[in-house]
Image (cartoon, rainbow, N blue to C red; front, side, top):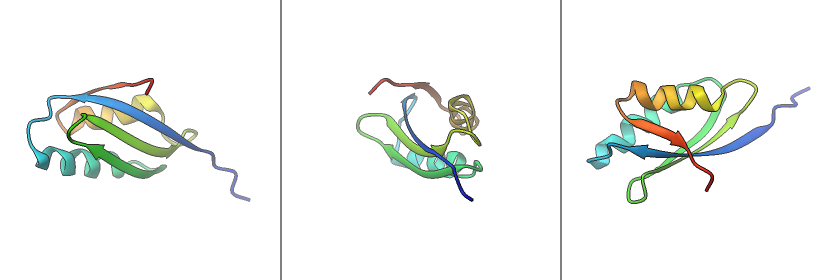
Length: 77
């Protein structure tokens, strides 16, 4: 029985300078097990992620963005 709960997390990113940064972040975060969808909004520097909170935490998501070379912080909106 699959009882995974999907959590929608929004991160605010810093250091965006080019549209190719978007693909880099989406690829890095999308690799994490438990991540279902990653959408980076270049203009607003927001990263929206749908993920299984039991398999991947917000800290894991922030770390994945850091691994791509950018700083991100959880956002309330």
